[in-house]
Image 1 (cartoon, rainbow, N blue to C red):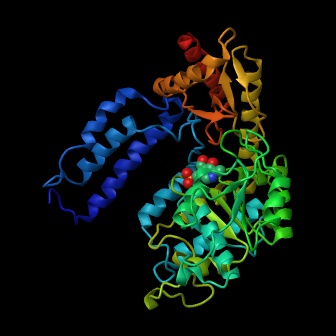
Image 2: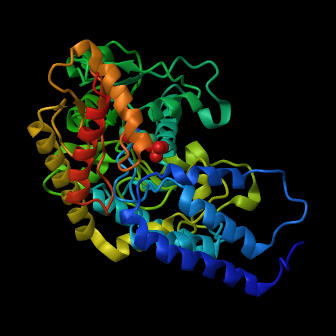
Image 3: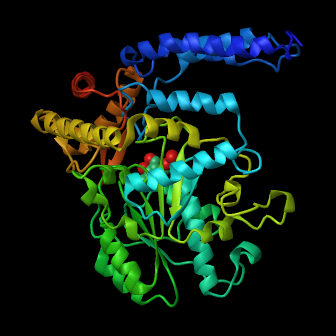
Length: 475
Ligand SMILES: Cc1ncc(COP(=O)(O)O)c(C=O)c1O
């Protein structure tokens, strides 16, 4: 042992080291490029053989900080627009440190009353924030993928029980294929959840009326009428390419009429409910049977953070409980074992950063943030529209702006290749992070604005960097 592992003082000294580095890192973050390739050579210092004798507590933590603060992607800074990646509010980030400090086992009530109570409280607050009925059950998950898994596992339990089978006990053998219907907006993570559940990733019946993937309600209605037995609908609140929404209320009507289950994937789009300005986009979500969303996107809580809500709370324990391990049983209604309500067993107290950020900023703080990001997205949409070499490809309903570089004189046939090169060049440049997607068959950029640090100046810089790098690549 290179130093006294069991020396109490080193535990606090190591945390001090992190706190000191945090001050300069966080202060510098708004001015840092998203990625600085000059730090890449430090990655080699992570490598090497397993140490026989360690270098000691403070040395190891110091090395990690030195490498990490330079080689990491500064994705919690204001100009990471790739994918849909939120930052961390100051309260959430500190709350996350508290999670590590206290190191609670959050799945079992008997292991931490504190973590259990915090989870119950934040689930209640989140339902309130999103306008979901207080009677819904819920559980915190590591991500929206896990939240989709949770909601769809409940759907699968419900569906199998309509066929007289307890799928938790007996599995899927002997059952027909579970019919799952969606628009073209369905996210790959819902497919992944179905794949994990043994329902098949590619069994979703997609009913789309155009190449953007917008739902064909009439076709879905006809398909549901032709299905013998119950079915599952997946609605997407916030599609990744453009931020558009399935008409959730219409899907809820269809589900009601055909006795189907409605699962809504609102990974980031559920946050539209937080502002009266955008709440119409997600109207009807309060009629869903299950709802999935992320904390590490628009709640601006550090990774990993997600949540699932289910209309019929008991289905969570039916789908995930029944461990057959007496020592894990809960003792009463208030003494909840959250590990029997979701896919994880041992789990960290991921309620704490959520509690801290909701306590710190409240409903109005989040409303203001959603509205500011909506304003910033519309500003970006306007700037794109006004630029002679950029083309807006879709309306801007919420926080995603889909566009491409289209300088005059470049033939259509060359635009995909040009935009692919542009996406790669932007990531290599590192001043702003925005990658490509394929939208309606066209290679496009689709920045998402969901970070509390992002300002108008960051949006303006995004446009000027895209145009500058684009011009340098023109054929
Ligand atoms: C609509 C939607 N669902 C699910 C996910 C998956 O989220 P996560 O990576 O948190 O699992 C995303 C990610 O962007 C998404 O946009």
